[in-house]
Length: 195
Image (cartoon, rainbow, N blue to C red):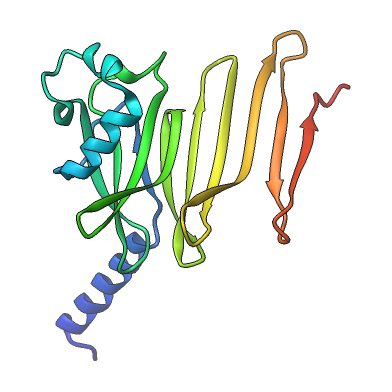
């Protein structure tokens, strides 16, 4: 008969293994669950990227108060700062910019950016040692979804599906782009089934 502590250990290991395999999902509409202090070099890059005039339109006195970050694991040893606006002043109609920075000593390196999105998933699936990233956004009329993978220097888009709704035919029309194994990108048009 197994002892109670060994059964508890097995149950804990199974629970941990199940949660360790999950994707990390972040919404631009919600605050991060475990916010991290944003390093000064990241704030400096964001200030340049966004522009002082855009930052001035926000009511926060310091650029550091306009953004929030969460640390994400890209693999067992590599962490990065996922950064988004803390307020909607830098967002347009619910679509917000999101950045991913990797710290190398005291320098911040931008390794991924989405200019307007609603949801970011840091996927458990990896390519070249780093987790893939999926970003998606949509409303009733149009939407898009992209998947990005690590190319040993930064993230590169490997899949994109952009669509819009055809109100008359009540279906989605769009363009889908997929990266093949040899690195070539292939486009095809998504049409309504009736066409």
